Image (tube, rainbow, N blue to C red; front, side):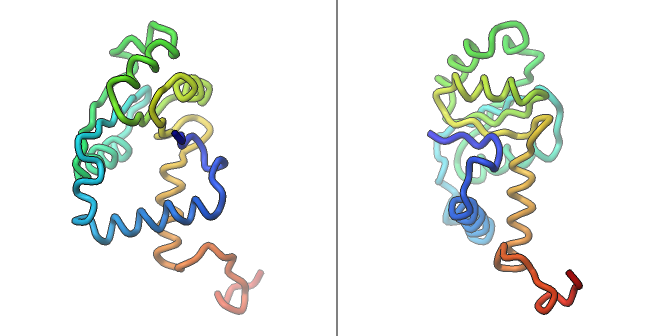
Length: 156
């Protein structure tokens, strides 16, 4: 099981493979409409979001899975130790996307979860946004190699 908490845990090869897979899914969605069939995504929000909420809901549904949205403050996450809630929540879903205020809470969630945890944004990292940005760069440039002055026409 691998969590996605920052991009620091990914080497260049893994990062490139994830981005290439994302582009493949984007360009040929019909091939992936059952990729997450009957898989549940718990979307845990301690802070609000429009784009993260919609993109994760749409993505899991387009690939045959289902989202379960949970507000941190309207659940026992607010009053119970994270480790207990993480253990229970991870018995009822296949992955967790958490948009939390504190990275330390995210680390506790991941430590005690039995399923992969995705950082939907915290005060330190926003790996999903970074992946989307990298995906756009890769789609446009076809590489992550540094652009030099001769190729790009920009002074260094």
